[in-house]
Image (tube, rainbow, N blue to C red; front, top):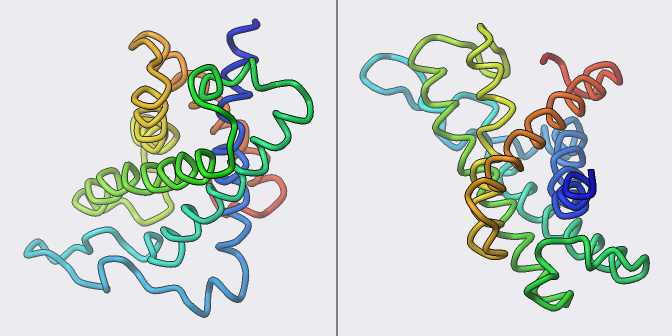
Length: 190
């Protein structure tokens, strides 16, 4: 139980960034600046590369929001004495520049690791934002986690078994958060 609590303390900035980014993409500001990463282009198969939901503003907002949440979470950990529970602070000092850089890497990896899944889903005609089967539902919940936890793996030096534990716990958390956002009508579909 203590290990899972430590995982949540370590992952919290990314969880918060994911929620805040989902709220941000519902704003008029986002909709005004929304431009797809693939520029609307299709491959020779006639299908889009990534689709309308992968946008430059969404990509960069996740990085900025991750920086902010990681800095704020670092301050919260310092004030509440949770630093000893955070995997990152067992090796690195809880400093604003460290938190800003690791937050940027979290946000960047989160977004980069979503792209292959979107690419594959466009190839097999799954609509952006939709999940056609159980396999893609699971992949949608964990694709970004592989990237974020890779940053944690490299930065904090967690063992491989713990990397996969983070994926498992993060996947269940992602499902719970998405269900909550769906119920609150912030997310259109699961």
